[in-house]
Amino acid sequence: MDAQVDTKDPAAVEREVQAVYVAMFPRADRSFVPTALGWVKDCFAGKYRDYQASDARYHDLEHTLQGTLCMARLLHGRHQAGAKPGVNQRLFELGLLAILLHDTGYLKKKDDAGGTGAKYTLTHVTRSVQFAEQFLEEKGIPVAEIRMVQNMIRCTGVNANLALIPFQSEIEKTVGFALGTADLLGQMAADDYVEKLPVLYSEFEESARFYEGKMAATQNFSGANDLVRKTPDFWTKYVLPKIKNEFWGLYRFLNRPYPNGPNYYLQRVEANIEKVRRQLAAAV
Image (cartoon, rainbow, N blue to C red; front, side, top):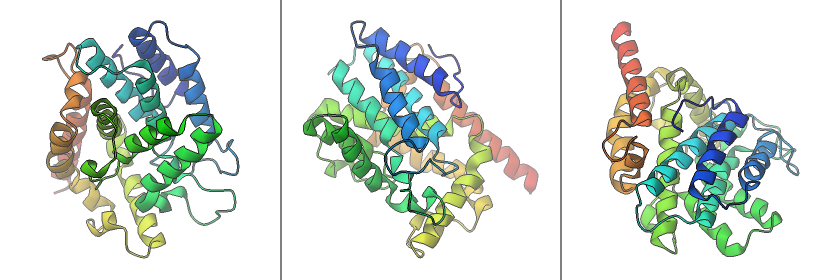
């Protein structure tokens, strides 16, 4: 179940996530995963209400699918390890909805003609939380469950104060931290992560212009090359400490076999960081 999956192919991701879901919950409703992924594909394709198709070039549907695949695998690994408290079927489903909706804040309304959805980088988490509420209410999801989805989405904020997120239980928090972990590892493990870093910078830059310089992310970089240059430090000084400490080391449930087997995601990220270091050395 840990074979490489083409995250540019939504059907391939759906098959893998469905396999995890059924393995964890053999009696589960097998229509849930395809339905949930179908909802989000429609949102990103401009088929939901008065929203345009996604036009952010980094935070696109594939980015969401990368995180979704990683999160499903992480929760499956935790399930196989027998970790307590366990994630029940409904909490897994809500976690899946949360990661599928976590970047809907980049979507623009039909009458929003200026720039791309990347201009909302600074506020995209809040916008995603709001979008999730509207969307899930329409789907008949109970308010208490919508609040859980929103709490999980809040875990993806770069500067989120996790202690202030109003989780109702330890296991809800666990799924939220699994989401935060998967959002980071899913994208950084991608084969084309290094090549897409200049695209990520362009999103930061667009948001800085839109919010008139209030976008802190670009204030840390002099340009796209500088973002690339600082990526190894981003990994070692921000992401690794965050997933090890703030997110409770849940990434270890991606080890195959657990607890001491290799971790595909860490290996792929480290390979990408090494690629950046080689490029930097060659440019000197």
